[in-house]
Length: 81
Image: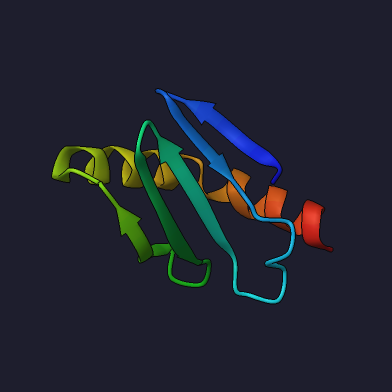
């Protein structure tokens, strides 16, 4: 599970065995977990899964992902290709 970012208490990471799936990022903070699909053509993220996320935490992690969108995509491509 390579960690991509540690920011504001969030750990953003990939699962090493998920390279057959579209680009996505996992995140966790405390007992909250989530996974988001990254649509690189439309610069959008879509929720794949959420566990224990509050509305505030959902906004926070989405903002972090959007701010680091290109970096996450670059790291995905480096790791899986």
